[in-house]
Image (tube, rainbow, N blue to C red; front, side):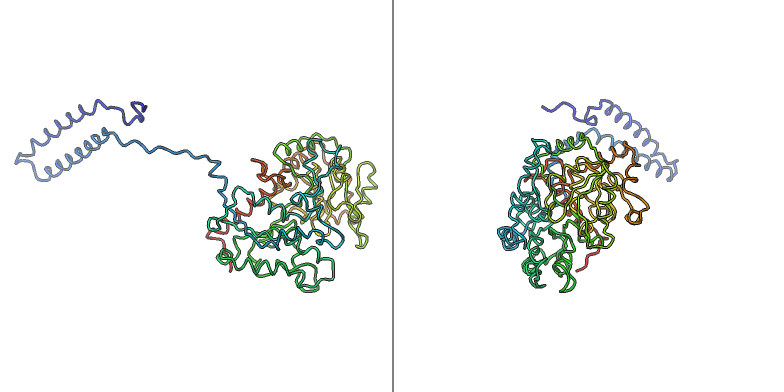
Amino acid sequence: MLPKSIHPSLEPQPKTLHNKATLTSSITSLLKPLSSPQIPRSWIFLTVLFVQILLLCNLRMFSSSIPSPLPSPIVHHSSKALDQCGSGKVFVYDLPQTFNYEILQNCDNLNPWGSRCNSLSNNGFGQNAAALAGIVPEDLLPAWHWTDQFVTEVIFHNRLLNHKCRVKEPESATAFYIPFYAGLAVGKYLWLNSTADERDRHCDMMLDWVMDQPYFKRSNGWDHFITMGRITWDFRRSSERDWGSSCIYKPGLRNVTRLLIERNPWDYFDVGVPYPTGFHPRSKSDVTRWQNFVHERRRNALFCFAGAPRRAFRQDFRGILLSQCRDAGESCRTVNCTGTRCSNGTSAILETFLDSDFCLQPRGDSFTRRSIFDCMVAGSIPVFFWRRSAYLQYELFLPVEPGSYSVYIDRNAVKNGTVTVKNVLEKFSREKVRQMREKVIEYIPRLIYANSKDGLDDMKDAFDVAIEGVLKRFKEQEQPMFHKWK
């Protein structure tokens, strides 16, 4: 039942009639003298004008006493429902299976040295890491896997197929995903005496198919994106004798956003995403449980290094770090990663990172390495010697201020003996170390890929952050000031 009054302006106004009578009497008294012939015409004009003003005011007072129509009911929508896909919707192309599923089915032939079937099992997460029993909390052991570092193509494809903002009608999409397993397709040809045509074959066939699609033709690829599960340099062959594929240099990929574990910092279309680690939480509670575990972990070593020397390189920087680590005694722990010992992670690596305040992160075969993320997931503070190892790579995923979560040491000062790593790290107070570690732990969700079709509820993992970043850049591209070439 509606109340008698729903707005103060609709209340009865008893004084209105009295005011009207008084005003009418005043007007009559003013009109009486107007018939007198002695009043000049100018005064008559002014008097009439004044009467009109009074009548207008009276009319407004009269209309205010008339009830206005009831306001339209306000419909309250759930802000969560409205904002869930506010950044856009994604259409996943149904590519011929030769570009994805058939590649997985041929997992025995993707590597010249052996089968990759185990590492590609469990939707790309790899086999369960049972050997970590006693190192990680027992209830979190099922969330740990021996994950290959080159499987982001599989992870992103599976998550997008179940994404809340995936649409099956391309006309309602704002972004178009190309589920081509480019890294897995080219991997077997990188170390053999293969021809340039063999290394480019899958990419060429994929582009022939995609470039024939009406929505690709409409935008010339600007609203399309792809995951390429290796470093960008594996797809940037500039001549037939060079390393890798030339996929990125193909005209069809010129305007397509590319998600890579290492980007070219000077290519707008390259977006760096975290290397996969072995931790794939099933729920938000898995993440918070792990964060609490690494936060409370007692660390006995000042710093550590997991890696192997590169003796073929003159003044091998890794060799210098290993030497300094040995000289530091109990302050430093090392893990020997010669050959393929550490390819998909080992219990020794995780245990070493959990036991150390800092972890040394020189460049790998390229400027980045998976160890950066293994280290940070363990709550250890990364120490960089090249800015391109992280600061110019993973802006979407790491804190804005590098000094809040990491240490940078000039490698040239280390090479010429001006500084030692131990001396630099010993200067940080326990309070500063605590603050940096807490920042690292805070960002763990953004560095890992969840093992859940629906993600981690309101907690964003690396996949969520990447997709949000892609949709945001597509919106920015629609702004008037943004220039698109054909």
